[in-house]
Length: 278
Image 1 (cartoon, rainbow, N blue to C red):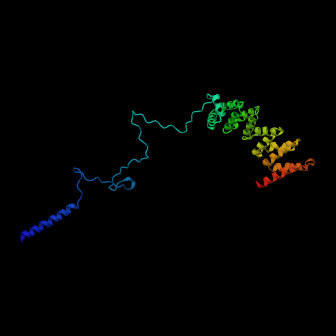
Image 2: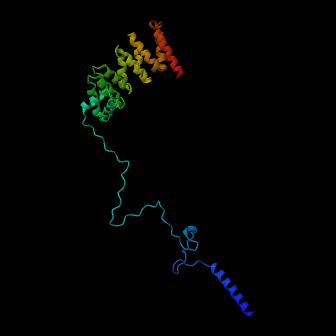
Image 3: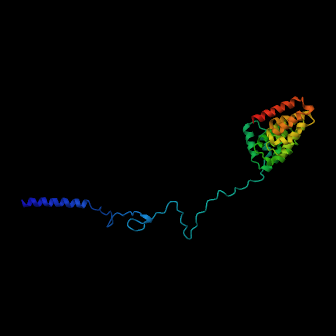
C-alpha cells in the first residue's frame, strides 16, 4: 500500500514541476542570450528604465558630408540659369523657301511657313520685304499669312516700308497688320488714308475695329470739306465714337448746311443707339 502512495506522490510532484517550468521565461535563442528588450521612450527622450533612448535619424535629415579625400557629388544645374541666346542670323535658303510658299501642296506650304517662322526676327523682316517683291501672288500671300502670326509692334517700321510696295495685296496686308498695334503713328497713317479714294473704305474699316482709341484723330475729318471724307469719318465714329462724338455730330446738325443731311442724321442715330446698348 505504501508503494502505491509513493507512486502517486511522484506523479503529482512531476506534474507540478512541469507546469512551473512551462510558465517561466522562454529559453534563449542563442548561447546565453535572451531576447533583446525594446526600451520604451519616456518624457524628454528617456526610457522607462531611466536610460536615454537612441533615436533613429529621420529620412529627411541632410546627408552627412563627404569623407576626407573624396569628391562630393555635383550640384544639379539650376533651372534659373539663362538659356543660350538664339542666333541673330541663320543661313536661309531663299530659293527653297520660295518653292515651298508657291507650292500647291498644303504640306509643303506649311513646312515652308514653319521654316520662315524660325528665322530670327531681325533677319525675318529682311526676308519678308524680299519675298514681297516676288511676282507670284501666292508667295506674297502665304508669306503675309505666316508673318501675321509672329508680327509685333517691333515690326512697325518694316510694315511702313511695305506700304511703298507696288503690289496692292502687300499694301493691304501691311495696313491690316499695322491696325493690330494702334498708336499715334499707326492711327495717323490710317486716318490720313481717309483722304485717298482707293484706300478710304479699307482705312475706315480698320479704324472702326480699333475703336475709341482712334476717335481723337477721326473727329477732325467729321467736318471735312469733302463730303465723301466726312461720311467715311461718320461711319468710323458710329463704331468707335463716344459721347464726345455724339456732341460733335449734334453740333454739326445745327449748322444750316447740315440740317437736311440724311447720312449725318442716320450716323448720329446709330451712334446714340450703340452707346445706349453698351
